[in-house]
Image (cartoon, rainbow, N blue to C red; front, side):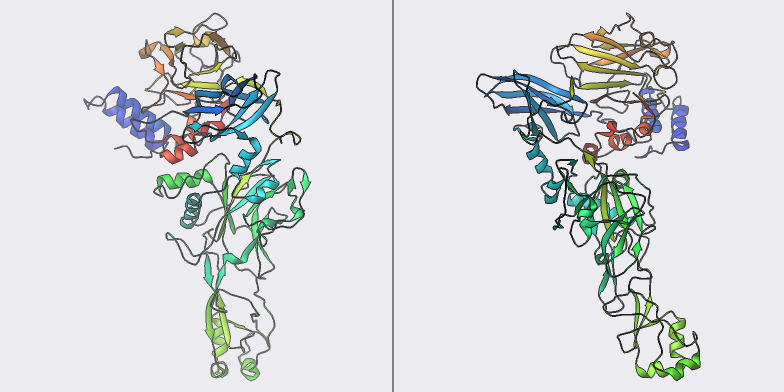
Length: 640
């Protein structure tokens, strides 16, 4: 039986070979089942028969449009930020009179939670608003600044940065649970520099008294006075090899010399920030560390580890029984974990001490005429604690035996209190956990007239990409056998762009029963791109024209997700077989992506070109939502 998660490599290949080898012996082992097994072994994960390959959703809009009486407004809904991005892509566009309602239904990328909306009057002046998505509905327009305020409501000090920076959303309690359970069950992690310059740090978890899920406790019994020490002593975070303080964590205050900016003005009021989020500018990430508030020594590597959100979610879904909530989101967070340790200088001082029982001491002659002691005034230690009395200390050999066992006397206790110190670091980076994510700049609205601007973006209709594999039996799943991009024009036609032909078969492109004829009066994809039949074009192996184009009429009720785009491979056993877009099923031989997508190079599996694809494709509903923007950030070799 094929397991839930097949590994790539020899095992997966062996499974595929066994399946093929048995096909003549098992009467019910169909060609279709062979193709399914091949897809699962090549992609490296189990594909349910009803797998959903859809990356877009439908939204219903009913938005009142206010404005000057008698004026009409062109309402445009964008898939991205028209105030900052060089190209603003329009998902939907309609003209509505002032006082009327913009009513529409359109497709949008599933990962989106809000929309920028532009209202352009007859003079070409545009006012930008935001529409928040709620259960597949958008019913209200609000100002851009008000929308930003909604996303940072849990972080009051985020207002300081909102004019210049995109401020991360707070983690939910379910997300925090998933993160610290990961750290509590994975010891001996490592740190890898993420090479960030501007970044936010937010607290996730500060240690408790008890171990959870078989992990380690985050506080430790103090030998000196039987109280807990540990994570509460970790209150000074530092960033970089220059140990730049992350001041938000220094007793909850924010410091001017950390270059916190509010719309270009430096903040130096040292005010409280109980929300525990800090913006670091022009900082290093070559290492992180902390300082013990009771000590004078910084703790850095190896007492810090970094884990990405994707790794934590993959663990939770495959091994952690889906604990908590997905942490992968648009912020591309990582998580820093710290392992508390007491080092020399953390109130553990070695000093010369003249024994009160001199005759006994000199007779033993242990360490010359002196031996170390610990200064216990308001200090705490972790280790074994021992109380001695005068009779014990005067007994011949008693002190020598204690010293040989590793005990040291503690001053302030009439020299009767002894401690055998222990290391606190246990290999679990659970004592203090914070999240780390890149800080990205935004372009502020015009202060004199917030929300009103003509914008600087070039405007186009949304581009949808269609990627095909032309064989269901021997696909390499680089999804580049035929790649087309389709965009509605401003006048309502469809612009079709052929950008890659990574196929050996000859292929033609159809919409429904309409054969696409390209701008050089050809039909076959190699011919259209100026390539050689049988050789790949525009996939990194062979080059041709940058693209071939065609403009066709848009069918009535055209939906980019459900439109019947397909390819017809010819030659070999593929004659007259159509390959269409997969919405559900066990093989992604054709997928539609609501984005101007960069396709994998030849022989680069889509799971390697986009390392979150397999996570999205094989995950539960919650994680699918969080990773449904997998196609935005390639991790391997791609073309554009």
